[in-house]
Length: 86
Image (cartoon, rainbow, N blue to C red; front, side, top):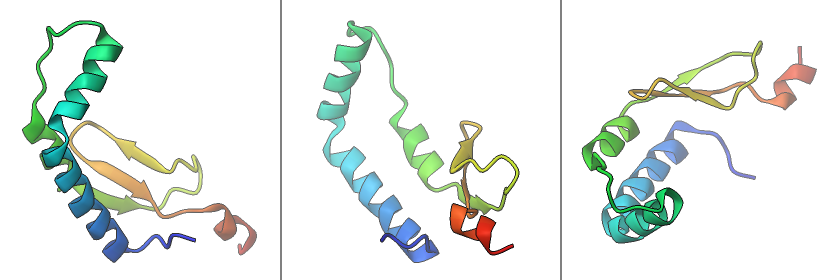
């Protein structure tokens, strides 16, 4: 089982940044196939900005895994195991 720790999140961020840098052409190919056009613009710096803005929240009401406003990603630390421990 994958543990939800800050260190694992940090390692995942590093992996995602490396993947994005090394696979821009693959990413573009996927976007072209979905949009069915080559007329688009991507702000790659925005991806890296968001990956550096990851915060943690605890929300046991909505029970979402994560939320974003386009500038920050909030990872919910709540999980179903916590529901039974109350």
